[in-house]
Amino acid sequence: MLGVWTTEQVRAAEDRLLARTPDGALMRKAAFGVATVAAAMLRDLTGGTAGRRVTLLVGAGNNGGDALWAGATLARRAVAVTAVLLSPDRAHVEGLAAFRKAGGRVAADLGDPDLVIDGIVGLSARGPLRPAAAALVERVEVPILAVDLPSGVDPDTGAVDGPAVRADVTVTFGARKPVHVLNTAHCGEVRLVDLGLAPELPDPDLITLEADDVGFAWRVPGPSDDKYTQGVTGIAAGSSTYPGAAVLSTGAAVLATSGMVRYAGWAADHVRDRWPEVVATGTVEDAGRVQAWVVGPGLGTGQTGRDVLTAVFSDGVPTCVDADGITLLAATPALWDARDPDAPVVLTPHAGEFARIAEPLGITLGADRVAAARALAKRLDAVVLLKGNATVVAAPDGRTLVNAATSSWLATAGSGDVLTGLIGALLASGLDPWLAAGCAAWLHVRSAELAAHDAPVPASLIQQAIPAAIRAARNLVADGPVKP
Image 1 (cartoon, helix red, strand yellow):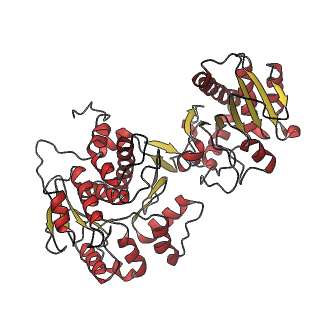
Image 2 (tube, one colour):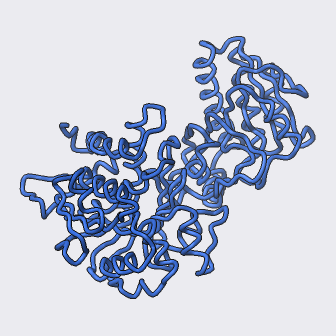
Image 3 (cartoon, helix red, strand yellow):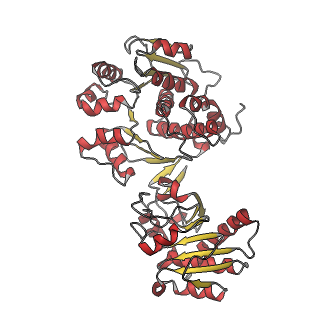
């Protein structure tokens, strides 16, 4: 797992480290990291660094100082470096002196660079770029390397409210901040420069999962397992209008190594035709014993849907509620009364579904998606998986993880049904509901990567890539490779 810290946490840790560090040492170390990444980008772009052209966009304060010190290092490597000072009277004095001494040149315009380094604003800034900076950034037609964060993007929420830098690479220092996982579209690839900050940091505010975390957590059968011990997943989804939702969520649970999958609903014949290993019945009451339920995808929002949701909650097992299930809970909060208080619930809303269930409770999905997901999770005593390009998973006790998408290939009809099947299988295996939702979200993205080959694909192909994604994660567990 990788930690993510708020800007307030990072600044407090930096202050403690600075108190026992020689003046300027941390800035020069950070700037050297920026220069190293910039040189690597130039080599990738042009085959070398000598004679290449770099333009620095330099704001006031330490962020601009980092850019100037980095420019000085590049200038000493025979790179032609130009600095555009957006606030000349407030430019970092020592950094500017070092930059000029190394042969750097101050200019009023971008010039014709091979690479631009964004040192406009740092972690203290809020709001969009000011007009002069925005006009410069709009004219950039080459890759951009951002110092600490892309200017104009909120460091704690990742929100963009006007002109902002869209970087190809962001170099950050000491620790990852929320912006780096909540807005990968503007950050690009994130590189971390170690400043020795770790001993000063508290527990992280957010975490992100890595492949080996998922591989270790994912339940696969052992020598003593049978179809019951691996977890029996129940799927209550689909209708005569939306049978595909049932087929997709059921198939995802099958492919996610559920020992057995039981389906209950209108689409039983469709499910049997596609997945003959599934025990398919017409009602929840006839389905038999399960260790977890998935309810909602394609279910409908009429009386039949309300009856199904009530029956699922009455079963007293961990439950993932998605799509129409969330809409039903929003429209008829009394449906919660059937829930066993000891049985965990995972809700998986997109933005519209979140608004339906949260706004009547006084919770608004604004720029701070993490705060909104945490508030709803606490209020409903449920794990909330808030879908988006950066998926936020919040537990009632405040634990929160973020899973950033690596593409937009999951923005396709039915992909959410695949995700719910994955969550259901992990709930049935006995995994902590918050971790189950996080691992499922990670594997969902990885399955899309494997299926897509750099082009959008339908949900059914994403579903088919699930076994390969599990195998890839399992191959990285600490006790050695897992044979395919």
